[in-house]
Structures are given as C-alpha cells and as structure tokens.
Image (cartoon, rainbow, N blue to C red; front, side, top):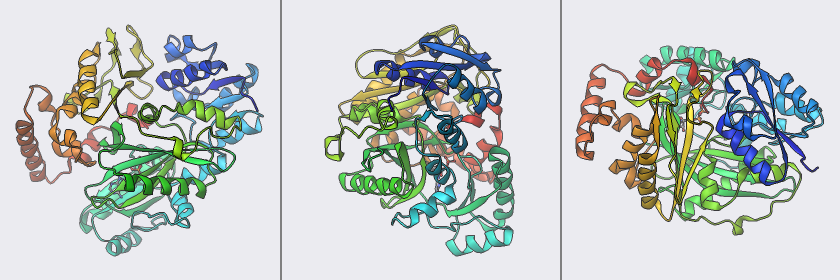
Length: 495
Ligand code: ADP
C-alpha cells in the first residue's frame, strides 16, 4: 500500500530527520508536539502539526490513544515511531495496524520477542548464535543467583530482562557482593520497566560493543549494512559511534553479518533493525539483543553506505522489495558520530538547563549535524538532553578524527554546558586514535580535571592512574559510583 501521509510519533532531531526524507519522497507529513515543543524546528517543518498534550511524555509522546486519534482525524495512513517513546511498544504497533494504518517497523510479534532479553535469547538459540555464557532464565531468589554465579564463575553481570539504556545492570566481582547487587538490580528493574525480572550473564572482560545494521523486506530478502563500533560508552550508554569498526576485519565482518541475518530470521523480522553483539579480546562475539527500530547512531551507516535508512524503512513498509542485494553494498570511507548533550562533563555529566544563547553549527565538506534546536531555544527538562548528533565522513579513520576535531572547534554553543569538550578530549586521546579501546575506555581514562587544561596523553594517563588508585582505596567502582550520583529525571528516556 502506498504511503500518502506519515505521522511521526516523536520529537526533536529524529522527528525532523524522518520528516525530511518523507518530504523528499513526496509524502505528506504530520508532526505532533507537546507544550514544551510548540516552537520546535520540526513542528514548523512539517506540512501539518498537531498539539497532543502537556510536556510530560506520558501525557503526550507516550499517549497512544491520542496519537492514533490524531492520525485518524488528519488522515495519515502510516506512523513512524522514531526511537525511544513508543518505538518498541508492540501494543502501539498492534493498535496502529488494527486502526488500518501502516506501522513503519517490524510486526508486533517480532517486537515483543526482541523486547525481552530472555525471550530474544531463546528465539535465537536455535539458530546457532552464540550467547554470553549464563543462565537463560529469570533468577528466582538469592540462593538461585548464588548457584548460577558459582557455576558460570565470577565476575558476573546481573541484567534486567526488560532492560534498556543500561539500567538494572549490576556487576558482581565477589560472592560477598551478590546479595546487595541483586537487590539493587531488581529494584531498578521494577522502577524503570515495571518488571522485576533479572538474569545473570558472565561479565565479559575487555569487551567491545559492535552492532550490525540489517534491512529485511516482506519478501524474505535480508541484507546487513556492516557494523557500527559503539564501545565508547558512559554508564553502559553510547556516546561516540563510528563505522566501520577499527577492530573488525573482513572475516569477522562477514561472520557477524551472517549471524545478524540469522537473528532477523529467528523472529521473522521486517524493516530496519540492529543486532547488538559484545565482542571479547579474541574476537569471539556474543548476541546481546536486537533493537527493533532506527538507532540514534544510524547516520554513520548511512554515510559509509550511501543508503538512506528511513527511505528504506518506508519502502519496506509499503511492501516493496529491497532494491539492492548484499553484493551491491560497499563501505565507502569512514564515519564518526558524537552525541552532543546539554550536560556538564566537568561536573559528573549533570544536566545543564537553560537557553541556547549562541548556537552555530559546523559546516563544510563531510559534515552532517542532525539536531532539533535553534539559537534562542530552551532545552526542555522533560526529555533526553541530547542537543545534536555531529557526524563526519572522510576517506579513512584518521582523517575522520581530524575532521571531527575541526567540526567540534567550529561548533559554538553558549547558555548551557555541553559535552563537546569531552568529545574533543576523546578525539585527542592516543588510545582512541589507535582503535585499541574497550567499553572501559571512559571509566579507565577520563577524569574531569583533564578538560580544564590541555594535557598531553602522558599527563592524562598520570591523572587517570591517580584517580583509579584513589577510587580503589575507597573500594569503589568508578562506574557504579557515577551510577549512584546520577539518578535524575532526565536520564530516564535515554536510548
Ligand atoms: P541495554 O539494553 O540496557 O542497553 P545491553 O545488553 O545492550 O543493555 O548492554 C549495554 C552495555 O552493557 C553493552 O554495550 C556493554 O558495554 C555492557 N554489557 C552488556 N552485557 C555485558 C557482559 N555480559 N559483559 C560485559 N559488558 C556487558
């Protein structure tokens, strides 16, 4: 069925990103907005925009009935959910379809399977996909947890079955810590997801997070669009992403791509999706989860493949066959993305509220800024504090890093603190430049005082070492310490 008018059930940069492609495809666009977003760029960009409620997401962007009512009233025949909010809610997908509209995404059944980490593991286990060693069932009680932990061996990771955004995840290095960490994981799982179910995995040491983008149509054609390297993380959440990964060679790429396609087959997937893997130092890769939506970091894949992923999502939703096969897809150069947040990296990344007094984005060849803000706008306190994604594309990785440094220098923001100085610090770090980093890079190497002065890499290492020793003396894990300090409203919706 031809899509005539799309309602984008989202806000900010991703709403604008989707509306732009829809317009290029000659599709009518309908935006929705809350009180906080009435002056937003995407609202003015859309052909039509409808106010759907107060700023609080539960009364606007998460309000299924209201959004469906607007889609009907304004005669949209498709809904694109973006990422976050309702994008991974099978009930919303089901109601959209029952209302006679096209849901731009997979079936509610595939979403339901992949939305639960344990159900997802069960589904893929028949397809020869390697899972992180652990118990593929929920923990019953403390005794059960102790038995499983002994069996797989410490250190372990306790995870929420319904997990997302790195929440409900607790590392346990020693049996004496398991009781406390289990209680914390359960209570965080309950408060964040309304589901207290947790399970145990082996903690992979020196891991890398590498994910594969896939596209699957309704005619059994599935391709992968190579990997994204997402190991630069803070509190288990991505902050810098790139494609291709400096760690992945052609053989590993082919093996991971094949595995990702198998995962898609395991849940009869249709649309754009991302299969996430954790990779150990010996290049063994283990399935973590599948995200059944467009990812925040999708632009790096678009830059290296030349494929507009939103366009492909729309084409697939209309029932069209993929216009390319695996052999048609090639990697061109290197792309990198930094997430620009309204947070203060010198003050434990605390959200920084206020008005964007100056807002000048970088320009020039190979630069893409996906943002939803303009000079003079306030950053609303109700949603994720991401201001923009700054993406660069160059011939190779070292040129991409140089381009990113230049772009960061050119980005001028005042009125709020941002993470740009932190991203610049990463770009200058020798370990990042070497490509030999793991998900522990920030925890091991970053100390806020490094942003105050322009330190050399050697000086930075000394500051990091002193900081690590200090924390060890306090018997504290730097990541867990940050976890405890950073419980605030804004972080709840991060993807
Ligand atoms: P979420 O859905 O909450 O984002 P994921 O399962 O995708 O959770 O994991 C988020 C991050 O946590 C990973 O990118 C990785 O850095 C870390 N992680 C997850 N599982 C493991 C593991 N078994 N060992 C080590 N690190 C892990």
